[in-house]
Length: 358
Ligand code: AMP
Image (cartoon, rainbow, N blue to C red; front, side, top):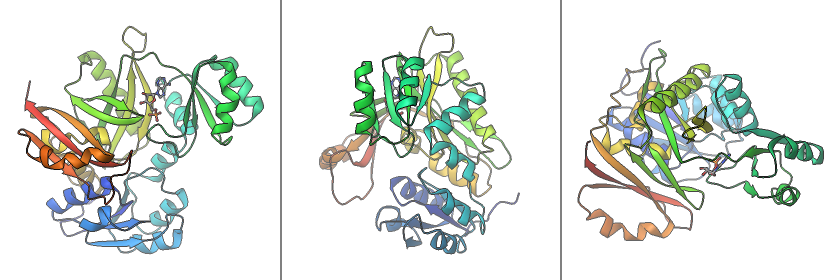
């Protein structure tokens, strides 16, 4: 279990803003990054090397992995074949098991439920028969979600009555789905846990997350989650990380239902650094990005303590046009991702507004 020394190269599968911020954090520690992406730009603009190719090209991914000391990823839809090809020549951290679980909502829910942890009621939907069965288990209201490739509220349809279900399934092109019961939550939180090769785990403070049009809008710490429930949330996330023998940062999104026998319900997991942890860049000594890098190269984990209160606000689409005004705002740190076009719904950057610590 030796640590990779400074000067080592980390291969990152995925070239978006998360890969970019991981690369910048690695550079601070004298580590290099080689990005594998299907498009140029993004993380490739700040990395030492990049390979452009489809993620489905397992041979190319293997050749990429041969040039690096360890492989990690910044999105959960890396094809399992590609991850396996990389793993044949270099350690892949977190391991492919986390990918397999996070790629498929049904596997994810079964995995979490099998650990004895709370998830929203769910049922598999893959054809007319299972559709009818799901309706009788879950009831008439819920959310139909595709098992794979859903993100930022895409691949989901709200169900308000039994009549909605068949058209909703059709609108999702009859792709394999899960029907989830509606959780009557007060608010949403996420737990950001980092787990080292040694199994040591550390937690960031738990942010309160708000969404706009299905996309994360703000993450605020401290959150109003009462401490005993925050402790429970950390236990849940820690148990998931341990069960995956996880290495790196894991995000576990949860609903908070005060008064319920089990007030924290897991919504989904992301086996990577997460948008709801971007505030750690400015409000913590060691950010989620640096801690992910430290974990995957086998270094001691960094301090997750928070030194300021903060609200992170995403800059979506044209929000970024206000960069001049935002850059002039006192007490804030602006982070822009260098994306060329501010298309609607596209994450262009974020701003961390700090307040003195409470
Ligand atoms: P997801 O893509 O699963 O994170 O869902 C996007 C958003 O839809 C969540 O952040 C919630 O606001 C809402 N949502 C998802 N699943 C449920 C559920 N079972 N009950 C209530 N709200 C939900």
